[in-house]
Amino acid sequence: MQWNTLFQKEVVETWRTKKWIWFPLVIILLSILDPITNYFLPQILEAVGEMPEGMKFVLPEYTVAQVVMMTLGQLSSLGVLVIVFMSMGIIANEHKSGVSEIILVKPIDHHSYVTAKWASLLLLVWVAWILGMLVSWYYIYLLYGPLSFIHIVQTIFFYGLWLSLVVTVVIFYNTFVKSQGLIAFLSIATLMILSGLTQVFQSSLKWSPVHLSDYIKRTIEQGTIPNDLIYTGITTVFIIAILLLLSVLLFKRQQLEK
Image 1: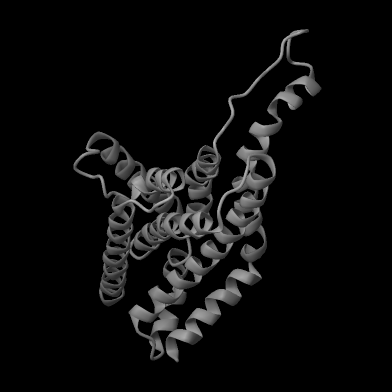
Image 2: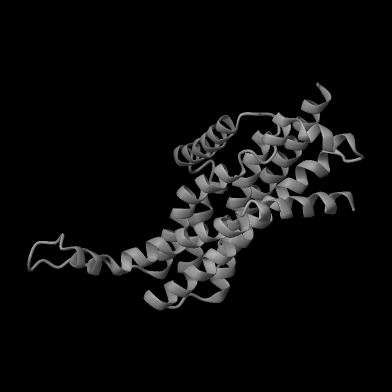
């Protein structure tokens, strides 16, 4: 009951700040930007007159899997930045202003406070991601060819785990850092370090969350889910659970030290 009340409060708050409007629109735009732009690029160049006379610009024929990777690529860069900047003050602002102390004076435990904020943010990100991928699916089918519904579901689920990890990393730093700018920096730096380590130690870190996109592409190309994707998904869920547990413990420690 206590958790539900906090969760509903957070959902209402994100609605009041218009996040339920602008954030899904941004994710939808990022999801369809590359597929549409690449398809119409020759016509765009001809229309603006940037091509020499008599020269034709011919793009390679992209496979459906490659086009899906275009969408995931945009979300892995710009999409992650939007999520970080949107959520970098979700706890830190209340912590800094003293609002969290007022809330926690009531019979509300630290676990409910942190997880309710995490869940409300996760709900927003997942809804926006599902909408973005469904719109992208429509344009992929229209411009490049059919992509089965089961592959869309698999892509939404497994890549959604990566976005969930991004959300959890931001929540983690929110629990003990008060500066929004520092939270954003640490979150982005953590994801970049994870990506860098995965690239350097690919054989040792083949189940790193960074590999989710690569395994999704292999799933679409081969038509079956590779074991590596399943194990990577499990690893990602495990990391999310550990970070969330640490977030609660660190936040509780911060409050008790006051």
